[in-house]
Length: 137
Image (cartoon, one colour):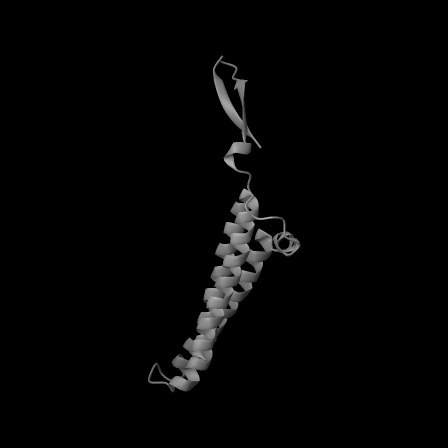
């Protein structure tokens, strides 16, 4: 069970790496447009990624609290490792996967911003006669 959970976390990380790498490659122009990636980028918004990650993380917290409750019911003494691992391994897997979704969603959101070369600067006058530079995208 531990190895399966570890490989599922690694699998999620590999999928996110593929999506982020393709999005970056598309962004800087070294990859041609791909309908699958365009669909994924439209579907995987920052808000949806945070929601999915939060649900997974909350599920991991609930399972972790359940394991602590079982330990408290046993008087904080020794537990059967086989029984405890059936709760703690999925909870850690959900915690890790949830955080991975949140962090990757933020990074994907950063990839959606325009590069600095696209930012135009225009001087504006202040009432005191000083000039400031504002950025417009």
